[in-house]
Image (cartoon, rainbow, N blue to C red; front, top):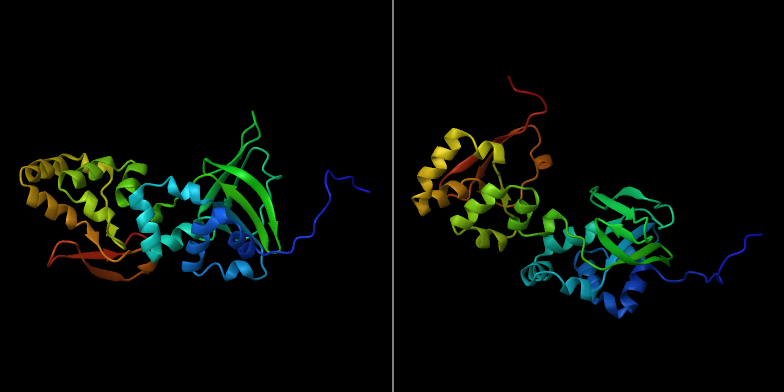
Length: 256
């Protein structure tokens, strides 16, 4: 005999049904539907959904909210970031734990020792262990934002690529790139931009805004290009600078 602290109620609804019937999840429901995931959450399976509320979504910057309602790719990236392809209850999280989301990216889980509060990627879980027939819901009070769902300027800042970020602002490109979907930047590291030859080239172009703009556009291409998409062959991509191409090679070992 095991004594429990409440009457056990049978679970009868799927994750999709729980989200659909709760008015605080209207934005999440719409985004899951647009991403083609709501149907999956109605079928048998084992899922964990970190569910953000409408009020959590409203905390986001207006430009980010617009991207997340207009751009299908951003919507998909963000909602997949909130899904884990197995059931994860809160009880096993004693101090710290890590799990992988639907895209294989890590989510960091923490239980704060002083008050027992739970966090995922430093976002508080405000309601936990809401059971469904095909998984579990934890409600979070902020949207978990992957890099792929954020404006480029935010990503550059988050990864301390501040020199390139300031150059984009100086050239008047930051706002334009933030509003563009499916763009790839090849960003020199802070170390690369501190080399004497790089400093000299940048100093020369800073006196000519058009020349600085051209240099930065040459570091961009579209659409989005992932390293895993390149394979082992060489590729030629159109850069953001008209009539100029970028040649890429992907090697599993040094070619010399």
